[in-house]
Image (tube, rainbow, N blue to C red; front, side, top):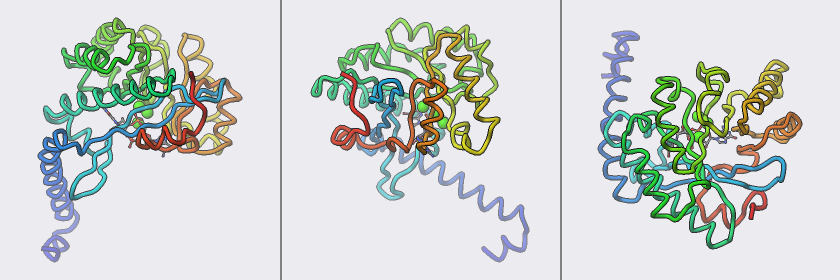
Length: 281
Ligand code: C2E
Ligand code: CA
Ligand code: CA
Ligand code: CA
């Protein structure tokens, strides 16, 4: 098998590789169908820290899959699998129900004014049941709408800005807030975003990672913060890994930060036991 692949040159390697990937994709899809019911999916939480007060104002819920045979599979691998099948609806519903319930419970137990950020997949924007799903998760958990922020990637919005605007307005009726995620990786302009009912802009990690090495990046990030504020959006920087990045973002008036420097995404019990910063009450 190996010898044949080698003799066939690059394309044979590619075929072997492609076949493996297709097989893995199909296996994952089957396993994911089971995972939803067998409690293999759980939610990790990463704190969002306010630079003005220095306290943790919210947590972003990030899906995790503990696969019985393959160990931990990252969402970057299984969310696309879910999106290419009908699974994205049950996976998303499971995520939203779990996260709203857990955060509502901690708010109650510790008397915290803690927000929850949840990611919506691009496919969910096309789902006519989305508003009802969110509404039910809020009602069942008791989490107030104003404590929930839904994150939608710039790319998902730009696929069909008119349709996206309709969905965002419908969600807004639930009193939830809305964030544009991974800003800077797509092709939108702030002029376009201005027309959408958004509250927050999240600057993609790729801009933050190299801040220290590039004058240009510092200028770009500074003007994104200024322009976002100018159209009434709060700004969150993602992927903050160093004290220098944190200091710089504070100096240019960025509102909130997230990143390994403060905390990796961790289980709710672990986060509540030792928060990286004080909570907002
Ligand atoms: P995202 O929404 O942009 O989430 C941020 C990602 O950056 C997370 O990866 C997080 O662990 C990682 N991250 C946070 N801080 C740092 C840092 O300082 N350095 C580095 N290197 N990375 C950092 P994760 O958890 O692997 O999630 C990847 C993506 O999967 C998310 O990107 C999101 O698009 C998607 N995803 C995760 N959970 C869900 C979900 O429940 N629903 C949907 N639709 N998508 C999800
Ligand atoms: Ca996100
Ligand atoms: Ca992001
Ligand atoms: Ca991302």
